[in-house]
Length: 272
Image (cartoon, rainbow, N blue to C red; front, side):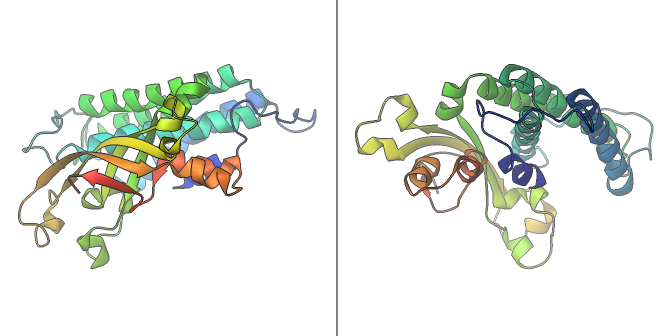
């Protein structure tokens, strides 16, 4: 969530940014500092919370989206989304610091990959997790998708990767407190706004098509609330909020929220 908040503070792609003053850090120094902070911060958090360093390096195969996986594959989309959000945030900061759009996109992708790879390598030294090649593949996919969106503004309008969250029963009952691992309350989707695909002069411009995935009831804490674990791919039709908010006078920073966040209740998914 911090990544999304900071993202909103940055100017949109193509916007003019002020030249950095001669005093203070240069943009190169800020770039090095950001990436050192990514590694240092992730490592400190992993040691404190995820038991990094408690075992020798190990790997494990977690599978993909099968019934026999730990989360039904929802965690894979969570990894991909982390790569997307980290890349978007980093690219926005690099633009603010004076890098041009192409350089900001490239550096943003490298920072997004640095964060997700640091976390995955750190998991290799955790007795509970282990390094997962499947996780690293989806990390790359999330970073790569956002890099293409940053480099090609037209495709940024056409394809958007979002997270939708509504607290699961376990969270609402106080049995779980980490929304980022509340997979029974999360789903992820690709949105395709029709106005960016040619529907600009008619009512279809307010509509977007969606395709996504979520899982329910895989965690042990969820067993009291679901009859059995379920995997839920879906397609849907929704209101394209960035366009609607723009017509209501919202600025680019506000509209940017909804390139990455799906508001529950603004789309009709099938199945629900």
